[in-house]
Figure 1 (tube, rainbow, N blue to C red):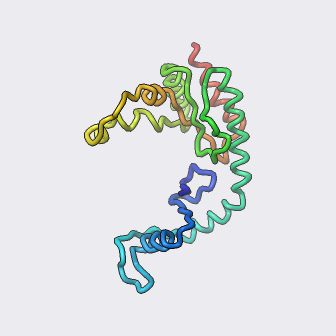
Figure 2 (cartoon, rainbow, N blue to C red):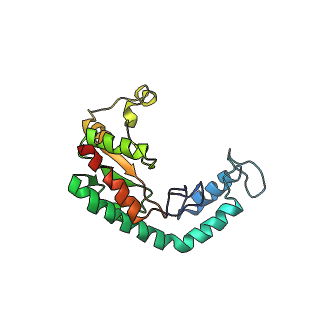
Figure 3 (cartoon, helix red, strand yellow):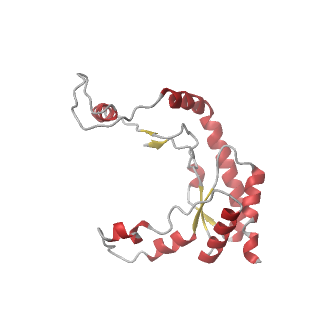
Length: 188
């Protein structure tokens, strides 16, 4: 499954792609995405309208031509983030250089540092996210339906220290340097 969301290097707006070698699964997914209709236009399943619009397909064709270039550019920009933040004790996801990089996951050296970095970026209008804070197992809707088999203290610690920094086709090297300078404000 591949997301085609606007933050992805192969962005067409919304939606996604499913790739399979299974002919029967492909047929079922096509049927489901066309209201569940079979080849006789009978509702064989309860489906939905999941077909791609022509405009999104045209954007996708254009994006496909630039995909390798976009991924390479994002990987080069990741290296700049690493060069600037690693000396400040920020940690990066293992194998992130093999990712298509919708955002840069970085683990701050402590909760306080991460919170300050986050708040400084928000103040100046930088699109930074805390996708995993608080962790899902602490949400009321999840807690009501499940129980952790063990303490999840490592998960909870990481969630307090993780940031998702912006990386996209339009971000410049200067933008990344500027973003990373916000870490120096923590020392004031």
